[in-house]
Image (tube, rainbow, N blue to C red; front, side):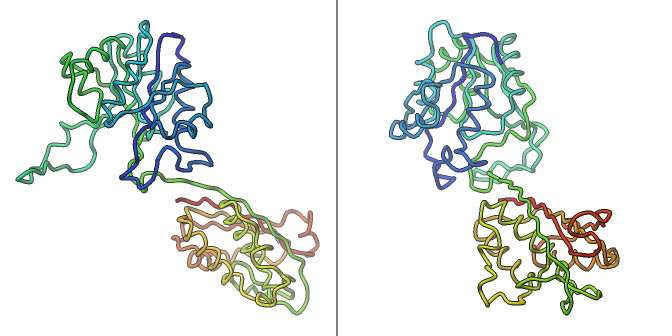
Length: 364
């Protein structure tokens, strides 16, 4: 936390999100509106927050933050919005950070570093070097020397009086506060930014990850094939169930559904429905994956442990992994299966049954 009570953070959240295709501030991120993540980091650093909003959405913002922030209505442009926020600063404000509400990944450490730099040098502008090839496109296509280009991020921290003065003498709309400061004072103090501090502009910018865990167990019985991860394993008995009783695949499906916040396979494929009698669990897994894809999620990686006293499963692990890769649509390296005997404990003791646990990571 920045000790100085005269320091402020302005968070800009009045945009329409036209390029994103929706209001970015209220898009779901980790189970809450994205703006909550941005504000939570800012609040860790500074108690004095000005939130610049679209006045028609005041009630939505107030339902999230109550009286914890000072609300200021935005303007028609970013420049107007910042001007409105600067005019709301108290006269004794010393440093002010101006931050995009659509940058939820800026770290607390970055904020603190920038405040300290600005306290010494009057301003602190986070930048990262350009790593892609770049062209200037006007009437000609001109390749640019990327080693001479740096990309500017927010938050940008300024001496409050200086940035207010810079805005008074600036009458053109710009996309960046450091340009306005530079035009007035002639220099900038660049500070190393963070590559993870991405601005959410398009849908593809907001990558979301979800994890899920699943568990399943079945008794072993006679006159049943032993099917594990879609592979028929030579053994005297098989798992008992309404479907083929493929315990690791059942655990995997429950892990996928858990990650998505959905009900388990007992609800999705009930054993009271004859449609699923002796059905291949890989077939059911394909349906669960289709549901994942409908929601925009794909598998990053899967880890499964199979608990069985017998038979020895090591010779079949690679085949089982390949079976799952096809259903999950991922490379072999992203599916791991291990087996353990559990030392004659629990349901696997004396060959009574087989259990399995699965953990998945999904990406949207």
